[in-house]
Length: 137
Image (tube, rainbow, N blue to C red; front, side, top):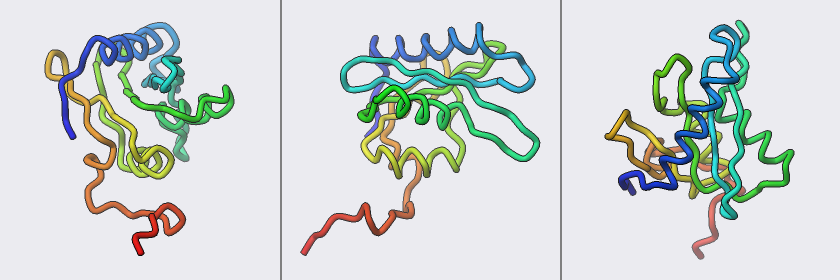
């Protein structure tokens, strides 16, 4: 499923871009993310860089959403600092997003070519936890 971004999606991109402009430091925080819940609430976060790895901005948003009682995320986007624009999720984030929100929409692309794709489309032939598989019999 791929579709063009609409005004609601562009608003989400702008929310992440504002956090990237105002809350990243160019060293330990270089990416911001924003996610919209079904009720319209927007949750934001920034990555936490560390040489041993660290959570990407998308994963920070998942934790922030849980801490705020938001369990029904619909759309997510990550934006780089220094006006780098929309950044697609890394492989680890794709798997985590799919595991926790299998119907999540992800905004990808640059400039006027941003589009919304299903997280499952970003990770074809993905691993599915046994607990998440539906009973078809």
